[in-house]
Length: 426
Ligand SMILES: [Ca+2]
Ligand SMILES: [Ca+2]
Ligand SMILES: [Ca+2]
Image 1 (tube, helix red, strand yellow):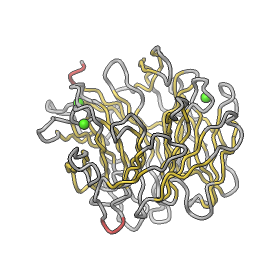
Image 2: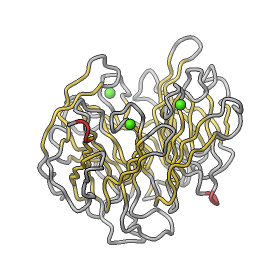
Image 3: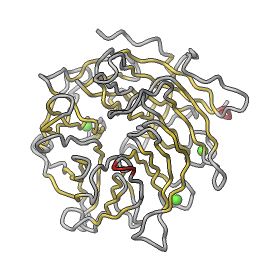
């Protein structure tokens, strides 16, 4: 049994729903000022106050990923690993929406996407055998009506072996005839970039297309955006990016390297996000070395004089432990995009336990060094997410840690949220 969620103070937040012109009023997770030992004490120099709330204790259950989903009533947090769970934001008590199935588990990579265009997000994720998600199939899961059991739809067989997508992301591109192709891009076996197109009848199999085999294995992390500056959705993965051609369904995608992180094969296992960090109108690639101790955080900027060469890397931090969480937004409201990074308690390989995993904000000060502030300490996070922006200027992060019971049987899974309130908003 999962204990019920602790008391939550329900607040109001406003955000733009996918594809909707009007903002929607959403009852959000807005937490009572119940400080825990996990939060560094705010000082008069702190940019934020932070309120932590444990949403669920899941004991030894494996949670690979938690994500925000747009629902009919506003939004929810959805997690997957051994099964699929959901916490509606207006009443954040856990619901099992897809039960366990025989010795199968769900992939790290997955996304929320409105597959059928009704304004409500479905979940797209792979399922395969055992914790390694071997021989995976890709599915989308839909809630047919509020509080009804979810329905499973098969998309396709991804392939044999331990190739489950570490990352999977929505991808939408225009064809030369003006029509739009919608679907998802996934990285298989940390090397193969493939995409699946939503067909006219999304309940049937989805056509699959290869995008590229990356030149080096061990690449992960996906971010999608216009990196070439021609309005098309390019795909960054690991230390490479694939340039979307004029006809994304018929022409070849060109793969280039943007970063030189190697680290004996670990450096390409990144977490990536895109944003215009310097305000020049072009996106940068923000990256962490997600899977290793001594992980780095850097901002990669394309050199307009060397369009084919590696991008300039501005290193922001070194010495992070498995920084497998990276979110970008203007957290302090000064119109510059800031960075929040979260560390894990234990990576998936032979590394020691991290006794004090941190969630750290890096506040963008333009040409001056980023201001650094530890927001929380003591609970690891993996694939941390961010709820949609609120009108009151506060932000809500949420995440579970990924336990490694084969090495550290005492590790337990928790789902938590952290409300961070900029001091200058009050
Ligand atoms: Ca939908
Ligand atoms: Ca820029
Ligand atoms: Ca800022």
